[in-house]
Length: 234
Ligand SMILES: Nc1ncnc2c1ncn2[C@@H]1O[C@H](COP(=O)(O)OP(=O)(O)OP(=O)(O)O)[C@@H](O)[C@H]1O
Image (cartoon, rainbow, N blue to C red):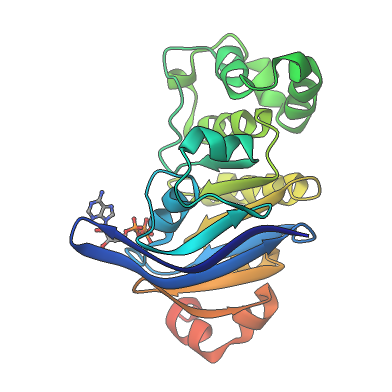
């Protein structure tokens, strides 16, 4: 079953076109789909478009067979696409527990069950449940942002640079958690750590200058001369 299908989208900010004829697909059988590429390639723009925050000027996007190119962000969450942005967007003045509750606003009746699963995966969120989100460490905030995303019971959890700004050891813990999450939920992972992200990926896309420059399995891209030359050497 195809969870997400993007076909030939163009996306612009005013007169500045950022994505050109971009296509990608995510199947239910995929655990991790990775989107890599250099700074400014358009990765975040693609995620924002999938989330309904930007509208493509050409092409189509379908989630579970339903065209979402003109849908509102809220409707896209209802279809199961949940985006954890790079800036995390936590409610800093609210506690960890309150932030998690906000994540489950559509599924209140299943709150207890989902909450139990999320804190089992991230025990620190239970230990810190009464602490204000703004006072957590960077790594803890990232766990909370991911945990809050999971509270919405996604089919696809899109994570934008989850290891960004974290020390290497913490970044590695985040990758381990992503691997764990991906046994239940398909993860769309945007990452600067190209080697680690491709290792995790069933399917991967390389975005360069707003165009899909390569696609394949994670191991195919890891072995591609172009990827090795441009992103993995040195
Ligand atoms: N709100 C905006 N208005 C105008 N231009 C924008 C806006 N947001 C992003 N851009 C431009 O769009 C291009 C793609 O940016 P985007 O953030 O999607 O890239 P990225 O691949 O996610 O980069 P990074 O890895 O640095 O986060 C860049 O040239 C950027 O300057």
